[in-house]
Figure (cartoon, rainbow, N blue to C red):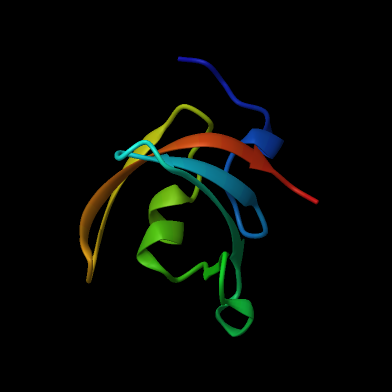
Length: 79
């Protein structure tokens, strides 16, 4: 098991690059509920909850109203 430095794990405020199971990639930032919109997702959302404490290379499965999707964490950064 590879240990990841704290900056490589997903926490509040992280910019996360994801690869979806269909091959597409997208970037999101985890924010508070009052800041959510567009690519800024609420820390309370199903996707953000699944991503918390994950690291690049980890895979998550998210079930939401649109169905179940799988994602792989490509990158995590903080600005």
